[in-house]
Length: 583
Image 1 (cartoon, one colour):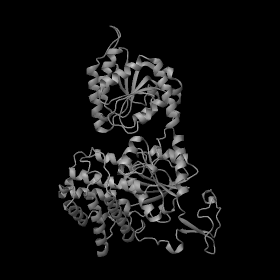
Image 2 (image 1 turned 135 degrees about the vertical axis):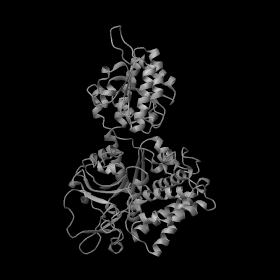
Image 3 (image 1 turned 120 degrees about the vertical axis):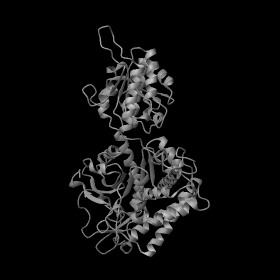
Image 4 (image 1 turned 90 degrees about the vertical axis):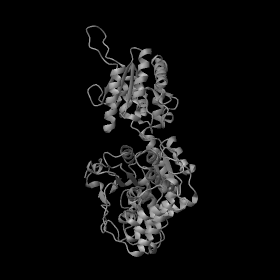
C-alpha cells in the first residue's frame, strides 16, 4: 500500500522530533511505499538537511511554517466576502469557550465542547480550505485587517468568554499571526488526485498542525486518516508561553483544542503512545472505539550486552541518565542522595547527561555547586586525593562510550523528574536489566509495570528510602531487573511497534471504500477497484488501463490555478528520494 506520512518539525529532518521513530517505521515496513509530507519549524532545521532515506520513500514534499510568506495573490470582492464569513465563524467558535477557556487557565485539562461549536469550527475550517482551493493561497488574507477585525468582533460579541473580551489590539495581532502559521497547510497544493489524493492512507506522526493536511486529504479526496501521538501536543500549548497575556493563551489554546477534537472526530484510528496521552484524547472527544495504544518502538540491540551481564554492575553505584534540565529535578535527587550516603556510606551517584540549552547549562552549574556543598571531597587515607561521591559526566568519552555503558556501570537506575512524557531513558534501563526507582509522573507507572519502585515527585526522603531498600537487597534488585528486561523486550521493541502499525494499516484499508475506479480500454470498470497486483513491484497492469477519481471520469477535478508551479508559497517543494538525502 501507499502511505502518506505527515510530520511537523520531524522526519525526514536530521534534528526533527520523532524522527527516529518514523525512520524505523518506514524502514521496517519495506513492502509498502511512503510519500513524506513534512512541515518544517525553523531555518536551522531545514539547513541541517535530511536523514538518508530508504528506497521505499518515493516522494518528499516540504513546506515551512517559520518564515513569512507573500504569495502575491489578490482576491476579488466575492472571495474577500467569502473569506470574511468563514474566518468570522472560525473566530466566533474560538471565543465561545470550550477547550482552552472553560478550564480557566493554561494548566487545566480541556473540557468537552458542544456539538454546535464543533460543527461551526469544522464548517469554517473546511470553508477556508475550499476557498484556498478555488481562489488561491490564503497567507495574505489570514494576516489582513479583515482577519484582525473579525477576531475583534468575535471577542466583543455577547457570549464571548471573559478572557477573550479582555483581548487588546496587540493581542489580536499576535493571535492572527499565529493562526496564519497554523493554517498555512490550507494554502498548499498537496490535495490533488496525483498527490495526497493518490495515497491509500494518511498517517499523521503527531497531532496539531501535522494532522491538518490529513484532514484536508480526507475532505477533498476521502483518504482515511491515522493519527499517532506519543506526546500530547495540545497539553504543550497549555504549558508554553507563560509570559503571554491570558487572551493570547486562551484563544490559541481554544484553536488547538478545537483542531484536536476535529482531528479525533475524522480520524479512522487514533494511536496514543501511552495511557496519559489516551486520557487527554478522550477528554477532547476521541471515541474510545477508535483508540489503539501503541507503545514507542525502541532498539534493544545496543543494550543487549548489558542486559545479559547484570553481574558486572557496581553494587554501590546509582546512575541517572538523561538531559540536564529543571524538569528532571536533580536538586531533589542530590538531597535524596545525602540521606542515602548516611545510610550507605559507600554509595556513589553518577549523573550522566548533557545540558539542554542555556537554561540547562545554568541548571547544571547550580547542581554542581550544590553537590560540592552537600558532599565535600573525601579521601580514603591521609596520602590520597579526595573524591566527590557525586560525578557529573557525559557519554562519548573513554569511560562511558555509550548510554548502554552508563546504565551498565550501576546496579540501580533512578529517575527523579517532575514532568515526563513517555520515559524512554527508563525503558533503556529496563533493556539493560537494571532495577529502577522512579517518580510517579507521566507514563512511568505504565512503562515499568510492577518491575520497579515508584515514589511521589519532589519527595527526597521517599526517593532515598526506596534506593536504600534496593541497595541493601541484591536478590530483590536482580529479580526486578530481570522482570524489567523481560517486560521491555515484550512491549517496547521496534518489532512490536512495526507489527502493530502494519496491522492497523490493514484494518483501516479493509474498512475503507474504493476511492478509484479502474477502467479498461472501452471505458468499462474492471471488477476490482485496486487489484492486488497493483501493489506488487513491476508492470502488471494492462497498458490501456487507466485510473480515475471515484465517481468516474466526469467527476475528476481539473488542476487548480494555485498549484506550486504557478503560485509558490515557498510553499512546497517536491523532491524524489533518489535525488539525495541532504539538501
